[in-house]
Image (tube, rainbow, N blue to C red):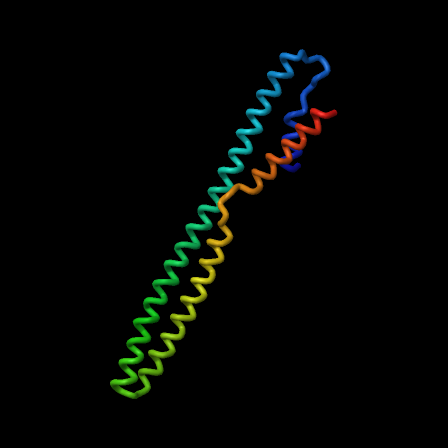
Length: 142
């Protein structure tokens, strides 16, 4: 059963024999419960987005560190190439290229994770509240 179905089942009152005061009391209670549930959903959504942004920022940092090592290897490559003009520079060049490739991959993945986390607004909860308002309006009109 969907969340919407559970809410509908939970908030379907027996209004045949209820007084106006009882109905207003139920409305108040159900409205409070609905608002609390929507707030919990919004909190869960924002928490997940914040966690995703944190992972993305960490990956940006890892990409920066790998780029730093790439620059160090590039400098080592230049020194070895100029000083010896022997095969060790080729090995240093390969390491440099691998580090830059790894830095690019990690940075792009981190960028994607941060973009997925923004904007930080609880979209599902906002949609649910809009649907709830429409249902209340529809029920009030009938």
